[in-house]
Length: 226
Image (tube, rainbow, N blue to C red):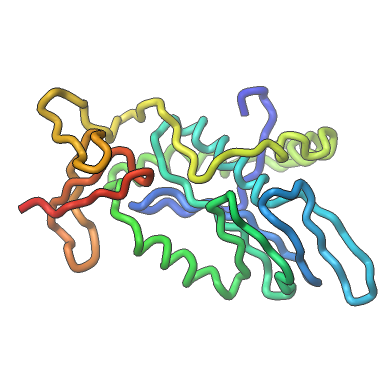
């Protein structure tokens, strides 16, 4: 992070659609929470309760850090995944676009999100993202212990910072995947932003070129080029 502190991301899934970021919770009991509450609650049949930090907010911070580190304009998708040993008793997610699910729902939830979106990255760009992030997974035991100690010392204060979903970082990537915007660049008929060409990598239109708005997902215009 910018202040020198660290955060730990449970898992990322780099795809042509963007990056899926997962916050995993291996909890039992009943789970209660909402995207606006600082603390969620885990309860047990014997009446005992265990409050824990809002995992949506935690994953927001993870995504914020990934975006700042990559310096790419990337769509991120947040998934909070509880184990199948618990029951999500009452959950309200209204303001956030994060998905709060259990492990048995994970495959279908990711597939539904993936299939609903156009490709924004090609294989080379995905490989570049992976090569950039991979060194961060090779931390020593001492570095991990330092991270845990720092988190305990600050009582997860940084994890309570809210961040919108999905997060986009405005600075250009290297190599930059965004086309230079000139007077000849076609514009979106819906919002007036620049259009860019993409080649469908899968599905019924695989191999076909289409135009998509550069302001995706705020604007979802897409059209196959004839």
